[in-house]
Length: 367
Image (cartoon, rainbow, N blue to C red):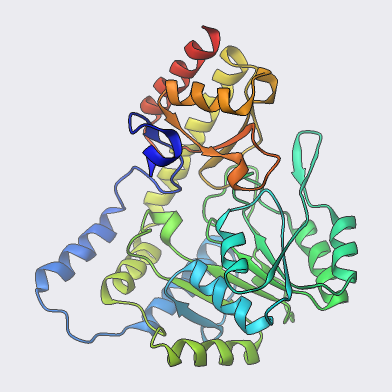
């Protein structure tokens, strides 16, 4: 993959949205316990998994969820794909707010639905929702579903309660169903608070999808979950899952999820503090040594959004400079055309490694 995108493997992969740190000890110990049993017969423990999810949201986000409104899915994108198929028909429009996680377009298009876009606005150096554009598109009748990213990948916004309330007001008015991808909900930095779509009571026009994968570095062993107050939608989703025998996850994923959500909080707090320290160093270094590279405010996720417009270099030359500095970042055009001078960087890596990478970039830009 590195060679196909960057033309070399001699780069450090900061484009992959996972972490370079070991998982929390309770997760590792639980997986070792399971492995040492040396037998893996049929074993399902969905209710304990769902209880761990409910307890985590109440403890971590002061959000009361009903266990019966949760259903497990193999992963977040699987859940998104299933909901799109349940809520829309081929040819219907599904709206995304660009620039956004590039797999959204794939999961919409592969279902035979039309990708509609509402570009985020940059106002005073911050990304904002364009509510005028959203209302115009909602009122057209073309948008059946909006796929929300909260926190937003790649720009790092954590949508405020007022922003979400304004969005939901429009969705209610025009009967647009919101699927809210909240996979990064636990990666929130000081001064910001996460607000879930599930926190708006009495609402059948919103559904959240989450997973412990990003929070705890469990991308290859995690499952996902859908939460919705819409009982008809839940029943249809469960029926679809059961028809494909996908209504449960494997024993490793189940017990790893329980361990993460019941014993991983101290590890997560330390991880967030480490990330904040890294962000502070990057901000200071860019201001002092690389002022031509702009870092957009980081409110959540462990991805940062870098703007190279002020280097006055074409996109391909910037990409080559990054390769020369051995920094494999995600090209901004992946998230939407027009972002060729933007690059996303995953910072869930050792700070010393990140520091050396930025110093190499500074040398290349100064040469």
